[in-house]
Picture 1 (cartoon, helix red, strand yellow):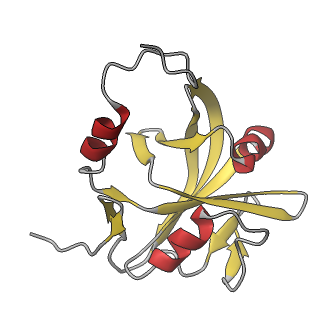
Picture 2 (cartoon, helix red, strand yellow; picture 1 turned 135 degrees about the vertical axis):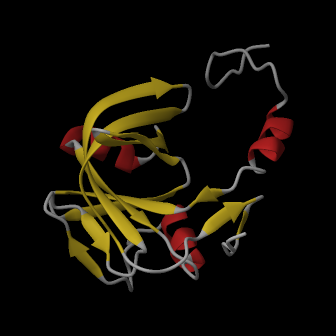
Length: 167
């Protein structure tokens, strides 16, 4: 049966797929960019490294989000990796609101992207390709700079934020 939204066949029930995928633990990041002094940001859990040489990542964002078009236009974005205790930031950037950056200390990276001062780490990225699949855009980007500080990441598992504990 074809999914009416994507036009692709769905071999697995969507609810079962969501349940199984929620068993994957992922880190939580806020992807940010800026256009004409207007900042854009969204919570993302589909961020992954692609290669160490050259340093590159993949970021997947829903095509319906305004930030997706802005990243395509500007060709740059930042990934702000959230740390333990940043669940409120993840929620703030995952909801529709006129000012997602309210109450947050922000600086800019060399590419002009908003950087969340309290983030555990951040990456400055330049898009080299965009691939669209079904409902999402997949950005392939070179990492132009990276920085991190001491702390623990904010993991996401079965629709909840948690704590990372080393084994």
